[in-house]
Length: 442
Image 1 (cartoon, helix red, strand yellow):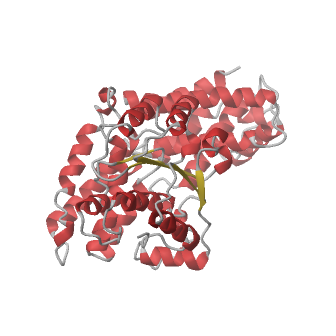
Image 2 (tube, rainbow, N blue to C red):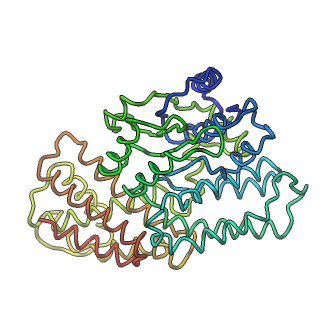
Image 3 (spheres, one colour):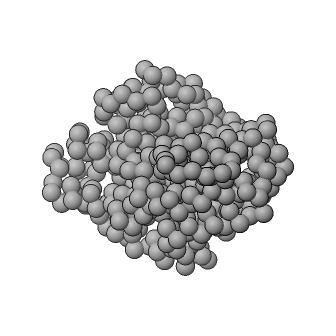
C-alpha cells in the first residue's frame, strides 16, 4: 500500500503501521506544501481501510477496484482545488506513454473533479447542479470507453477523441466546482456519515480545510466531536496554523515534507512519465495551465492597483497599499507616456480601471468566453486577488482602516464567486461590477 506516494518515506511508513495495527484515528490532518502528496495519501488511505485482503495496490477485491478509479460509494471528496492542469498533464502523459498506468492516472485526475459533484453532497440543493449535471453526464459517458482492466496495446481513435473531449468538458465543469464546501454540504456529509458503509469503513476527504468559512467549519466541528466509528475524516492543508484550534485538538497530524530537487525529479519521472525539469510538482502542473498562476497574480495586482489609485483621492492609504498603488502607476507610465498633469502618482494612476479591465479580458479570452481552455480563469483571478489581500493584511504596517477595507473587499469577492457559480452570471460583467464596488467602499 502507498506505493504511489513517493519521497514521503516517514509519513508513508507511519500510515502503513497505523493501518496494520488498526489504530487509524477518527480524524487525520495531513499538512505540508501544495503538491507534496497529501491527497494521494488520503485516497490511498480510503482504499486501504476499506480493503479486507491486505490492501496491496493490485488487490483484486471489488472494493479496491472501485477505489482505484475513485468510484467507491464509501468515499466523499470535497474542498476547494483547481483541476485543469492535472487533467492536462494526464492527457499529455497518455500521448507520451500509452498504457494502463497512464489510463489510471487520467481517469483518477478526472474523477477528482467529478466527485465534487456527488449527488450526496447536494442533497436538498439539487438546483445548484443544474448547470453542471449535463457536463458530468457527458464526461461519465466518455469515461465509459476506458476499459482499464483490458486496455488496448495502442490508443484507439475513439479513445483519443474521448480524451480530448473529456479535457475540454472538464475545463468547463471546473467553473461550477464549489470553491469551498458550504454549510449545507457539510450537513449532508454528517447525514451520510451516520449511515452504514457498503464495505468496512467510510472516508471523508476535505482538501484545503483551512479555507472553510465559519458556518461550515463549525458544522464540521460538530461531527468531529462525536464521529461515527465507521468513518474516518482526512483534512488536508498547506497552512496548519490557519486550522481552527478545536479541530486541531481532535486530529492527529501527519506532516508531509517539501521535496528536494532529486525527489521532485523522481516524482515527475515516475508519476507523470516526463523528463521535464521543474522546481516542484506544483510548478510542473502550473505550466499546463492556459492561465498560469503568475499571470493571475499579475492581473490581480493591476486590478487592485487601479482600485487603490482611485481610492487614494479620498483615503489615506497605509504603506503596503500605497506601495501597491505606486507600483501600478510605475508600470502604467508607458501607457500614459507623453501625458502631463498635476498631482501625486496615485492620482495620476486613477481612472485606469477601464484599461485594466480591457487587459484582463484580453488576457483571459474574456474569461473563457472566446476560448474554453480559459474557462476556469475567473476563479483563478478571484483566488489571486484573495491571496493578494491576505498578503497585504499580513504586513506589519497595515492599520485598522486597511483591515476594514480588505474585509469588505473579501465579501465582494465571495459574492462574485457565488454569482458566477450559482447563477452563471457573465464573469466579464462581474469583474467590472467588482471593480466599481471595490472603488465605492468607504
